[in-house]
Length: 128
Image (cartoon, rainbow, N blue to C red; front, side, top):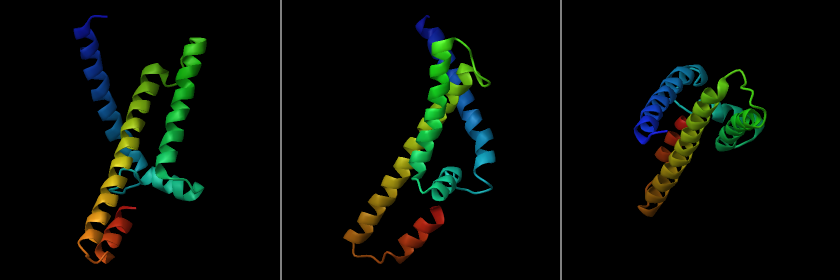
């Protein structure tokens, strides 16, 4: 494959990933502003971290991709759809980790400045 063809396909693939994020995001946020509501809700019910739930979703798609590679038979979503979901879950996993680190950094900054943590804890509860 020519390099320019690869980057054209990549751009189209990633734009479709973004469209999937938007469309499926509406379905999984349960009318919440929290992008990770679904992962947190399932994590709470199963006593798992939201990032672990995302990893389970990723592994589901990896198993389907592996089955395709071994058998040559595409499943219901096809290889492209599975790969796009995998990319989207990877982005969400990274974003969850980023969010967690930002809260941790903010908490350390507040403690270092001797500020009251009440407001911070209320904010954290709202975003949990």
